[in-house]
Length: 371
Image (cartoon, rainbow, N blue to C red):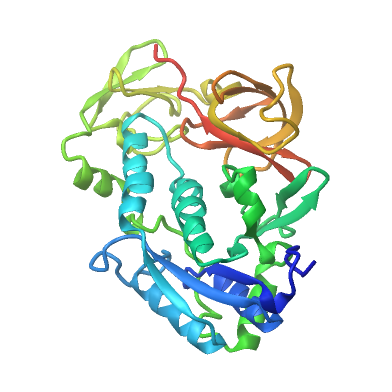
């Protein structure tokens, strides 16, 4: 058994490394090449080169493809650019737009992992006779009593397991995450040691296909006229103002409501059917239970038990995990009852389940009924 828990000599083990052009995936490739693995670097082209501008804070843009190729040349591995524009448009960008129009707040990075990266790219890695697909995510992989398990990254400030909740058992058997036991400082030290040109490159922050954070511009371009005006109402239905489209609002938003006077008000619900933005007090944002769909379960059995099981959950990637009980439902659904009410639970976001450090899966938070 080699260092990737694959039953082959290192020199006979072929791995495909998803190289985004950033420091994390570059160091991942360099470390494995140094260890003696048969490493192939691949970079996904996800949108048109004409739109893939050299813009700091993104990933998979034109500059990133160039950086990935330079790193591959420097460490002496083959490198390929794979065209996934069509797949990315259909599985990620279109889903992003439709989710906003449905009054929800999407997480396109999870959809990308779930579809383009761990479905389409993983399939290409198999076509290349690879034994594993490797990424630079900060999450840990181990063999547990019932097979592969995914754990939070050692550095909880860098942990990316939340964005991997939709990874299936089958995919997990083929994936590896070598950086899970490191922190970013250690990763950059390795990059300098290898002399990689990306050693000081800034981390990606923005959604790759959204220019300067203006997601509304993307929606207007792809669905012109889809954002219809409507009313801003309080929780009793009283009209307080007008808006230009629910896509401009997210749950918990306070600024930019355009209604002055009185106590602070927050967006507590979006109603695409009536095109209403419902606002209320901070107390109205507090919820102690939520429903999720498209549940991916990595714990014992095929789904969360209907009688309930104790977990901790994260309802935002930046929020700490909190205690809860998850009750499995029919058709890939579940109900999550929180130990303590939480604020601004946004439909379209992910509710991710943990047992201590171990990722148990998760699901997409559903929008509550209107009215």
